[in-house]
Image (cartoon, rainbow, N blue to C red; front, side, top):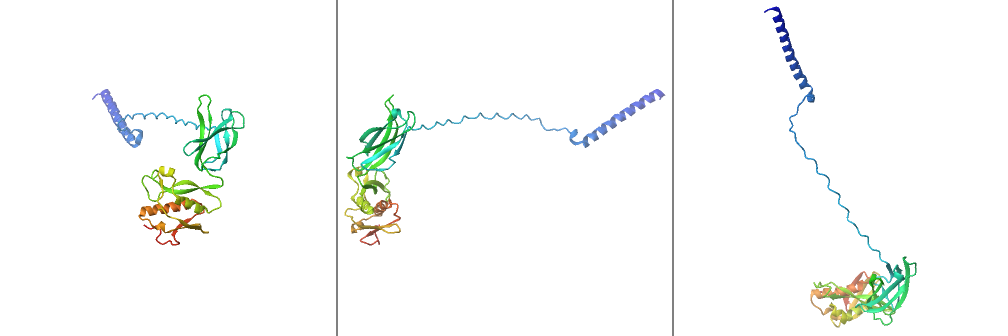
Length: 297
């Protein structure tokens, strides 16, 4: 082989060896460099964009409670009213006129009048007046106050208080009866109160039990009230001791009853009537001084 050709071939061979050596070194260097030349084969996944957050819901609007323009302070709910009684409070009404109605238990108007709140227009002012009901029978009723809107004649801010009209010097008490209207399921020991009045100076326990023995009035019977006590039962004595135990002694007619339901009803009427008094802690029922087998079915 001539000299120039041999020299050309030699250069080509050296170039080929250099390229192979470079490729081998590059491969080795790439394997040893870790992630620098690593190629992942993880698939190309397109993740959808997260949905936008929901629109905030508007908070419910709370309507402010309308403020009454009358505040009735006296009488309070359930107050016992004598022949003369006060009605008082504060008002912010048209021309400061507060109207008052007194009604009986049937809603009949017994008295209608008005009084004036003392104060500046548009501001709360005090009102107070004294009323008299000389012909009112004892019993339940209501005292109602309100004002009249002259623009349309409607009554506004009416406040109704249930009260008890008591005769002079009397104390309102409760006696407990059964009621077919209030207890249609006829539970044996369920009782309901009605109002009576006890004159001052006597035993409040005796007054309550004697009113119980008298039974419901005709009007109360018409409303469904009834007594489970047999006729002829009389109260012989009733005493209380220092521990708060009230012992009620009756004649033998109390034992002349049969049936567990009726016996339970009688015991409930007597006990509830006596337990209305806060000092009563326990009730003992006896017949002719004996407690054995009393009100047993």
